[in-house]
Image 1 (cartoon, rainbow, N blue to C red):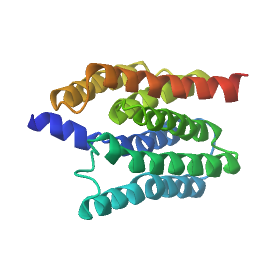
Image 2 (cartoon, helix red, strand yellow; image 1 turned 135 degrees about the vertical axis):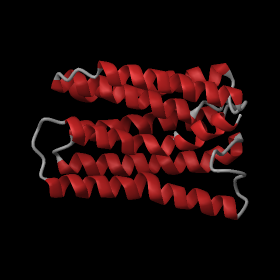
Image 3 (cartoon, rainbow, N blue to C red; image 1 turned 45 degrees about the vertical axis):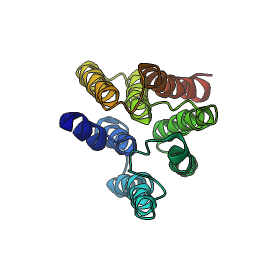
Image 4 (cartoon, rainbow, N blue to C red; image 1 turned 135 degrees about the horizontal axis):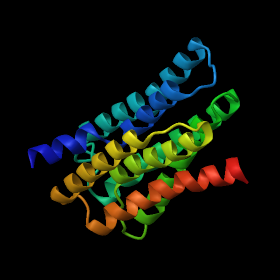
Length: 202
């Protein structure tokens, strides 16, 4: 149980946008000035990680949520809507930069997946945001490797193993049913691939 809690906290959904951004800058072959890279990374860390983490901490302090995992359907509504707004704001900002379009699509895909998760909360379905996070990262790397012809096979293997650990942890903690984690996984993956298909291929 302790290991499952560690996995759930360490691989919290708000971590994955930063991981995707770091991987993007590590492997993108197109030249980007380091100053631009650091600015983008700093804004994303503050906007998608530090600010939401601070807000979750404040919500917990005021007893509006029981934990940063937001266990119940009602507790999830505000944090999820907040992350949707942040994802879309970052998407708009990244598109305006015009040098990191794929990264903008990554955040747009997350925004769409979280919007689906939010809508499902209103019909009492609580899909796994952890599963959305890891599968969204996998989906992003699939089209990132397609565009730049990079072989990510070892990273895919690592991420699928990690996805297995995360899904198993959420099930062991009884935070979700099998239906909720697998639905979350496919929502996260397909949102990324559909976003790429609409904006990049069509």
